[in-house]
Length: 172
Image (tube, rainbow, N blue to C red; front, side, top):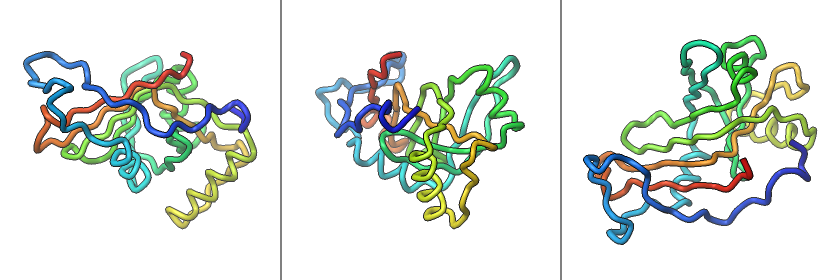
């Protein structure tokens, strides 16, 4: 995806409640307690590890990766021969989540391999600043971008009241 093709960054998406069975006790929207989008983006920016769940032609695969959140997308790299990358070549659908089961952030959507040199350089600069390791951004190892279709977040200590979702119109 080129710099020109990327959608403009959104200021803040509209929060709603996740679609879950009624037995989960999710509170009505009017009850308040929704998590602010800024809290979620802070968690995404500051996280060290992101769990990636992929499926290819076989069983699901989960693995942690390092990544960078900017421009309303999560970017990460992996070796082209890795199971993650092979799965994503067969099926770009992905679920990513942060490490905590208490302060939950889950992203769902499709990834795209990033080829735009400007975006690759921005990724490499941000990655190097965060992890003190500069990734190779020459196309030999894919760098993927996830612009989520939906994001879910909640605090385990007050799950039914804080369960929050954001849905994005990504044109797909």
